[in-house]
Image (cartoon, rainbow, N blue to C red; front, side):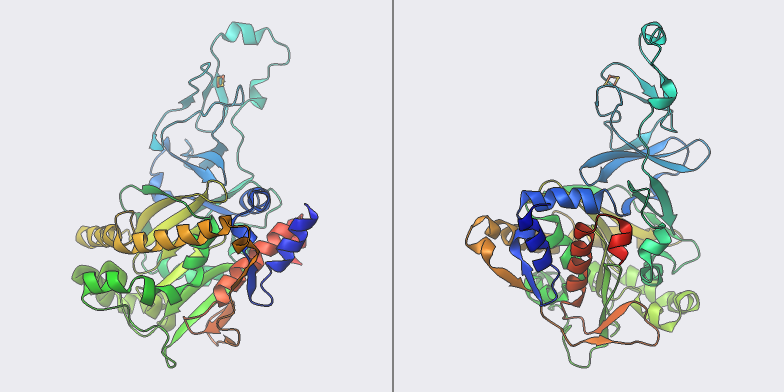
Length: 432
Ligand code: FES
């Protein structure tokens, strides 16, 4: 790491509430992120419902590494680098499907659902080579793969802590959306992909805790679609919080403002109301109030969702100034089909490439990134000091808890974790 980067990363710990702008622009920072965050952390790769039977697969990204995620014959899930060990060609060019195996387009090597090499074109020629060992020529698997209540995560780092430890206290909050019904969850329908001209962290930090922008950026969209603006989230007596654990962040409001993000669709609202008692039985009274509330979440580093709205998304890095956005809609598997459809329609109208709120955000994030092309602008620092005195102990909420939704506490937690991981050479160093 260069001396410049040591200084830069030190400046980005946010202890004084200021962030160095170079973290959104410099190529060497980005390359370090790929090594020490995306090749090290547990990353969301699929929902189990996307892999319903043996042979079902999807292709996705872990950093800039393309991976093939597949349901194997024994029902387990595997994930492999989607690159042929012969000359490196991408083996599976489809984004989703079902297959008995995978054949490389270049020279015809074939691979099983377990990633093993099952056949080669001109096998007699290869068979004469003493050093040709099929068992060493399968697709490279990820180091670890695990699931948490339907979500599939993988890491390239064999030294990464177990997924449950990586999530830590944050699992308590994840259960609000993943475990409020005995039937579990599923992704409804397909996915939408789009490209933003922004640094991936600007999107991730927005979902980590930027309730501040909602009442301003989205005011006109809310007015046009709902006939009223975004509720005042900053009232002094509001029962709202920023909570974070291990860099994972959730901000939420318990004042019963409801499912505004699906535009208050009556079918969704009726479903939430009818299930209040069941939510409370499974989650307890406090977490039951979080179901469908106005809130947003980022699971470190780049997996975000909006509870209530139920849009789930990954911010895939494609260079320091470019992000590929993948989105899905999560629903309770046992919900009636018309409720699932309403949830999906709400997401399409609000947080899809043609949705009003997504467009509002994208323009801001692109300009916030692009501003840093200026060599003078890039030397300025950014203010992240809001809510500096809001930390509290809460009798029911684990992790780091801050009072108030209009706050930068979660963004500071996000960048502290980011800085900590970039500076650490090992997980042990990151934990200390
Ligand atoms: Fe795949 Fe040659 S690159 S078979």
